[in-house]
Length: 126
Image (cartoon, rainbow, N blue to C red; front, side, top):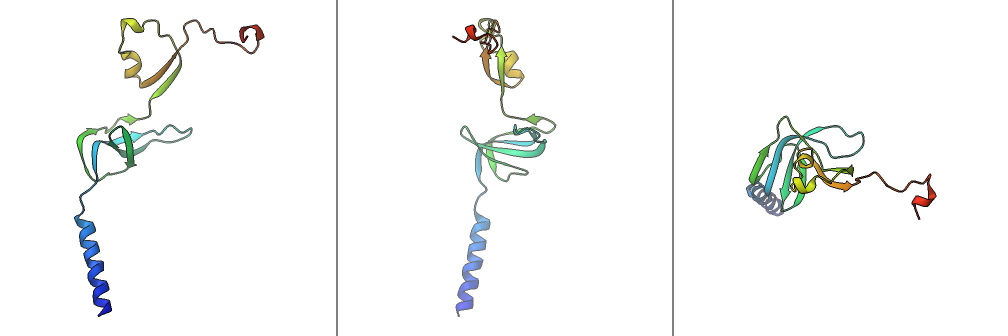
């Protein structure tokens, strides 16, 4: 009798776990060549699952549905780039910074005259 109860509950568990819906996402970016930003990392083909503003899964062949899906086949998906020496003077002429955005720059630090303090000139640090 104990074996039948064990088999019954094991079968019930398998049946219910198979019936669970696949995880839902707000956005899935499919088939992109993923560059995760580490030095020496290679590109890997995978999908990216996003909920809200958070990446919740990166894996090949994500199962599930999304309100929006992007086919990134043949494209590289990477984190935003940081420009540490940007000339931002023209920004009032292009407030959406299209040149930077199209190149994947998400953060830019202005350095209009390259006048950063220099360790070789101690008076510039004071």
